[in-house]
Length: 380
Ligand SMILES: Cc1cc2nc3c(=O)[nH]c(=O)nc-3n(C[C@H](O)[C@H](O)[C@H](O)COP(=O)(O)O)c2cc1C
Image (cartoon, rainbow, N blue to C red; front, side):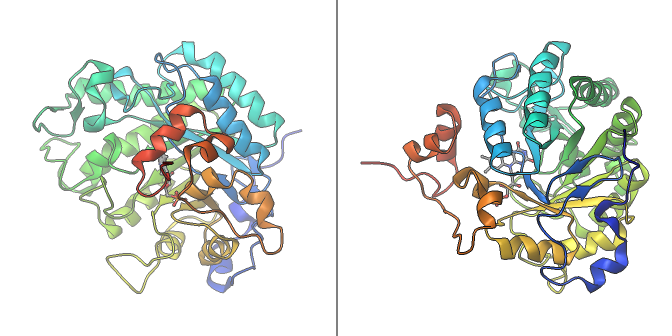
């Protein structure tokens, strides 16, 4: 029997104003308005691991990685960014979702996560100007022309919107309960949002409604291509960080409101340092600011340097419904389970390649972690 959709977190804005650390139990179920639910408020953050095949079909090591974290107690498992068109691929070995040939692998993934009691969400994306020409064999494109990059034509945009929708429909067909549209970190959708990168003078550029148009049309198309019980999450970088440039907190707040109108079931804030206040308003944290503008039944995930139970609970007290864990989940495969053990102190990098392998990372993923500053301790 299907459960009736319930409000995210079971309460509205008033709860958040009054919440204190510990009020919302990290280990209580997360219920989304689509009817989907997770066993706790802890998600594995999406992490590129380069462990799939050249054609984008699911690799065994990618599957094993995701399963290991489901077994470690992560209630929600979000896949790495998976490209929705061939020309959107960002790295070799990236999971793909641009063709029906990907569905059998995703069906295996859906079954494996279901068996392990995790809610599986597939992150879908297009690299835009950051697509890897060496992998795609094509000139990357984005909102505006730049050295080595061409400007998107109306046909490109029509094609990519349809590709996001088709990808989400494939994910649904494979039996995964939802997708996360990657609107963060400076890939195609962020490039269009960016005041710096988007210099277009057509309806996909200019003021915020123009720059937000592509992400909004993608969200609506994904919503229209899937049924009401399928969960649609959107990940955003609310302010500039790293490759995400030309973003503004107030514009991002307005965008979040619009995305809720467009059918977004949950927002995923990628903050990198969730414990810090916003840059624009140092007296404000992003989580309560977004909570205040979102409808009560739209849930919120937050990620960014969450290592301890206290740090996770602080985000819930500020109004997040769930935390997403990246690097701590790499070096603590059973982080959610261990968090309940009194005196648990999470492992922190640096770790050796051999340790990463023992933590369930295949050789490519482990090697790839060398690109992250101070993560891998080189053995003599
Ligand atoms: C190895 C690695 C790969 C990542 N790949 C992705 C990705 O594919 N999509 C995405 O949205 N974020 C990606 N991220 C960012 C994480 O999802 C997360 O937001 C970030 O690492 C901050 O959380 P943390 O401090 O808990 O690691 C990646 C992070 C790491 C460490």
